[in-house]
Length: 123
Image 1 (cartoon, rainbow, N blue to C red):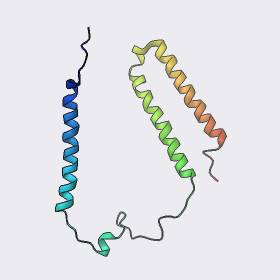
Image 2: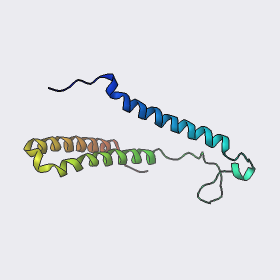
Image 3: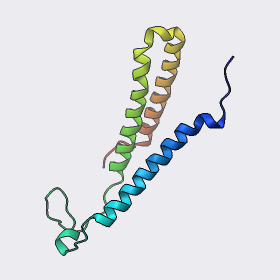
């Protein structure tokens, strides 16, 4: 028979969170108080990989870049779900195989949808 848990069983977890939050808060306060406070034009200037700033950073560009990036992440994460299945392929049996076929079918339906919508067409 499984033992039921009581609120006192979660005390170590609560204490861990309190210590972690205390450490973060203490570190932020101490570094703010002890850190240097020198301000100058050079220190407040934008710095990007040693390259001097040129023009405005708010230049609009095509949303297609973001769309392709989001779709890449989406399908990349879906492939990550296939790894545990491949590792446990033999132990999952035929049922696991059918479940993965269903998963891949949903992926292909989504891929077909974005192709039909023209999400990957560059103009």
